Amino acid sequence: KSNNLVVRSHPTQRKSLIIDTVIVNEAAFNQAFPDLALYFSDINKNIVAQRLFQAKEYLSGDLASWHEMPSQQPIHISLEIVDPGKEAVNYSLKFFSPQP
Image (tube, rainbow, N blue to C red; front, side, top):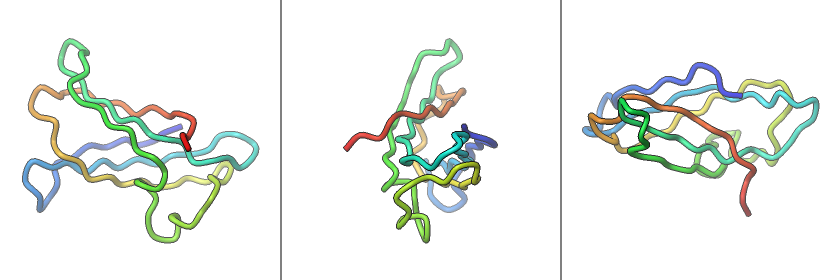
């Protein structure tokens, strides 16, 4: 699951956003890190932008060498993306099985 999903303007890069969230593997066992899909929608819930991130794109530092997501351990994720524009007023994050 994802906790504390926050989208904010990038402090130094124009037309960019920083996405922060904490993900937790709620299973009783370790498993592969999921692919993360980030969606932005307009006021009518129409998707205006989306992006899929594989683990190698969102894991950094010591986490980059981890092969599995540990059970019940919160993991902070921070992503930098291009701002999808003023129409993107809603956002959501979904998990998918990792693709090879």
